[in-house]
Image 1: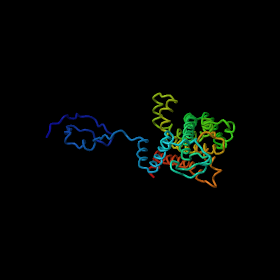
Image 2 (image 1 turned 90 degrees about the vertical axis):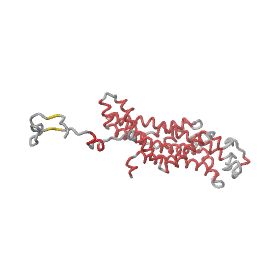
Image 3 (image 1 turned 90 degrees about the horizontal axis):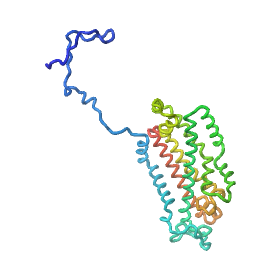
Length: 332
């Protein structure tokens, strides 16, 4: 038998009544580490850093066929926006009345419109203005609505009450109706940035509501309270801890809204209140093609199809991102 490493000395019981403490002459032994199962049962394995919400979302998105298809379509659309000359060598502004409404021929895939312009070239080059309006307007509503919603949700109280009432006032005004009224002021001298400014001014309330609710659900988290206890200021806490964790609903809303604003620009241009006629956009081409709907419906079909595919891609992408960023939806 191994020698005892130490012997207990007589002492009073250390435990509660009913439990016996060490007795006189009792000895304690320490077994060798090799003889204990601790190395097996208590062994810790290092599997790297814990996975974050965005990492899990990316893993889910890569396996989602809807995300893959919509992302590929959007990448192609962005390629068209930045490099239209790769797809067509025809000048979209070169028109000959002698080619009016002619069908497709070699080198002119979609044929000609009523003015004798190449439809394919106009669809390709028209993507730039339409997508630019959608992207820049989305950035505008994220900045305006995100700021209103984040401040209202985080600070609460009377500050929340004032900002929420302002949001409700703007939310009660229909986007298209407000855009039609205000674009009348710029009729005849409109530009891309005026359309973006009007759509941003009346399109941010939905983003503000989503951001406010997300911030309210995050600001009471333990990590936020821990940062406050360490002396982090409220505003810095909002920027560094609350907003990054409140982003998922904002990302989904922004993705879906981008398609909505592209449709809004096309609607305004169709009514003659959006982009000027000398700017190539899908909305202007749809407006010009309405007079040829009976005898040449293809003139209207091609820009409408490009608009529909782009908007559908953004909506599908938003749905896929929403499911990936929502743990409950992933479990379902």
